[in-house]
Image 1 (cartoon, rainbow, N blue to C red):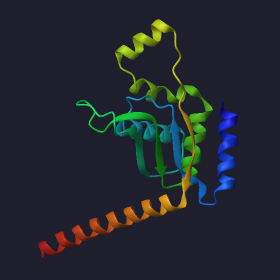
Image 2 (cartoon, rainbow, N blue to C red):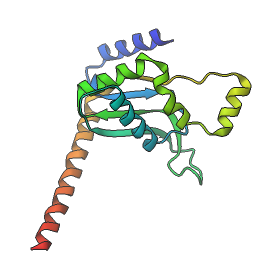
Image 3 (cartoon, rainbow, N blue to C red):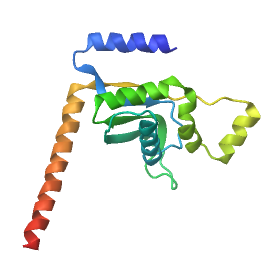
Image 4 (cartoon, rainbow, N blue to C red):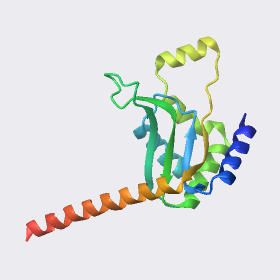
Length: 171
């Protein structure tokens, strides 16, 4: 039940001072397992333009995967059905969140992208309605955020060093 989840989240936030709610990172749950990062990113881009949000960059799109359930077809592992999207603008994150919450129909492109023909036939036979994904601002740990920022900074430094090396070669 959603109310219990919210109460539990608030209890954890009060109990642990290292946790906080991000203003730019969104948590998405009940995603179709066949949706990958590329499909999710395309969906977010389209949704951002439909929501008339301010200009923003998508900083990260991540689907959480079960590393134990790798196959020949899916070398990354099977999706656990949830993921994260991080934008660089808090206002855009809020626009996106409001847009997707405002009408379940807004999720249709993502739900359809995650189903194949067999899934569609099965859901029609059983008359099953698919789960509507849930979007909310992500709960984060300060130590995890610091590590992520360090990795981004380090990778930007490597990228800048490569560019500088290429410029030196051209001379």
